[in-house]
Image: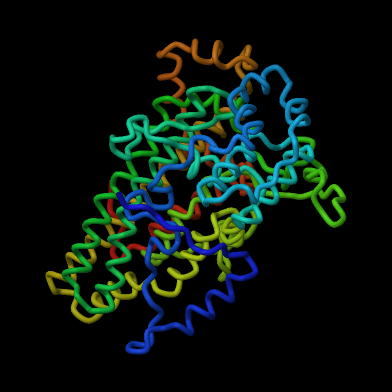
Length: 468
């Protein structure tokens, strides 16, 4: 079994240093930066940015059992409003007793999920293990999705129907499904990265047939990725997501509307242990490394947008760059490396310019655009998900008896659900426009951000967009 290995911890302020050091190690024969090796960045050619050896379901040391025992009854403690008093009873544990990467990731998952109350026994080890992992001490996409799953059948496939979430905050099947669909998307993209890294080598060798073959391999996986997100609708009720789950995904930045005017106080953290207030984005799919990597591979560029305008500025999208701080450090380093070595789109453009009538060039353009189209389709579906799960719910308001979703929301009749879906489809564009100004859990202006990403993806195609 292939096992991803961990890259050295990379601190945010060290990224420029890594870039310059990497450049100094360029291949002397061709003067080019070496092509990245996936395993060097804790990326698996089988499961992508999700760990191939599976996240730890539990910390093995008895020393950390106060954390695990709280997680065992987390849903009960939240519902009975006992969580804060339970956490206050924790000892302040020393995270240096976490000896492996997967143990540190499990500890980070535990503390992220229990958090947003942040008494000292939680804040001190949480910030410490986050510093070791070089990732923000807040619920992130990594803690909620990348490192929070297991195989139902350990010998079965790495596929959606064989995955389940290790820990949730609400105990609902809806939250489990919401998280595990995201994890399955990450895993499905894994084999595409192996093929796309190989394509960089093929471009450097000017082997057009090898480039085409690698793109076909990547397309097979990207087609699977584009078809996974619509499965969100199968087992995650939009009302449960919006009114029960979504509040746990919010961070402490730009959340005055939730009563967090001054961020969150991390007790026992700061100079001389003075309680420190911090502001962080919430967990969001924008913190996934998969789609920034695909953007680099296929030459998709994202630009800053004027407020309340479709106009773009030359600068890179600041929000997308900001989200890098919430990604695992090895994955950030991979994106840095990839940004300097990705060469597919310039290669396709050069071949198109030099020999547009060649059969190989025509096939190259076709398969390149087909891959980009898969990413565009995924982003189309993402807009539909946001419309149904956020914009529609905001307009309707909470359902009667919404405090207990496991009883009330699941009693909706199939005909009512079908009618609601029909209404959403018929007014999708209208709701997209209504979504102007609506914030995502990561703090973004939802619809301009998502539609901009989708349109910029489509613009990376070499020929006219493929019609549905």
